[in-house]
Image (cartoon, rainbow over all chains, first blue to last red):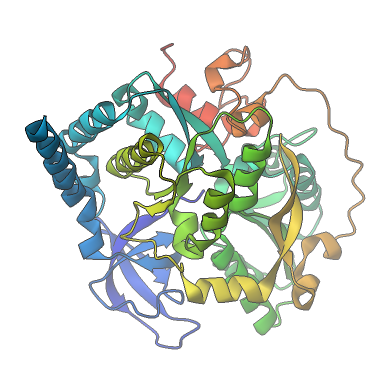
Length: 84
Length: 363
């Protein structure tokens, strides 16, 4: 139910803050999405979409963390092994 | 697809598998709160990557599963009325009520429509002015902004033929209820990433402090869940407890302020019943008095005599993490997704349905 999918904003149609909608591409499938909850979103941003509403703009820097975090773990393990 | 494929990388998964195994020194039990996470865990076989000393329990975060029987019966009663168009997310149609389900009402000629968004109900109401349109507004905090916006627009547009049957619940009181239970086995939680995208995670800090239990806000892709588990295990092993945010690409500490403001405007905190669990104080959202005209329960004077019948279904215990699907004697025998005894077998995010679909072979 809380399923929400990332998609890329291709265009933003209306700038009336309550009815701000955009065309969002989900791997090529394009749907109209309500952007009222992401006033900061601009074209080419990736947004998380749930039941027709974008609920966040994905932060590309933070998106890397799941991978950089692994490097940190590996360094910690290596350091531990060295000290042993 | 960007922001999806890279989080399903088996080499990265292998590294997390090793990191978790290297970190854990004693048995721990971690509960993922959200049904979407349960679905990913079972679909991608994440349990197979974890050491035997780590147990994953599946939590109550499936709104379809926890919507109480009374609300389903009310939905069925309203949907059977003449001149009513009843709109719902598709998952709700096969959830068993006391006697029947919404799909049967539809098969018997009731105008029951599956919609993708609550905003679709507005369009239907505008195009069918001679009908009463009712939307089944279920969900957790993730869905609350969408439902709130539809209700707000209904009032703004003075749509007299649209109302909402509300069954909105919120996560933190359910976590507290699990922690207060004498049967509690949970040592740490993976909190639901999309719920926290809306609400942020400040409200989990008092829970961490009071119960001295780690909570890691976690996403839904396999790498997210593995990283969330790793962070949780690391906290458990170090004895340090805090709220950590694994899903930082979507979740900010304060959440989505615009969405929270509209939830606040439309809804207030109320007690709600959770199917199989019972009433949890301050665990749901109800309409504020400015919006009660759009409450379907007021619009249709429902006089439903509700009686809970004995059932072999143990979904209440499954939703609280006390039992797992395979511990139910009816699982995959008398209870299947085609003929579910309870809601956890209906919704694709229910733990029973996920096990049935991906892991029928006994472990």
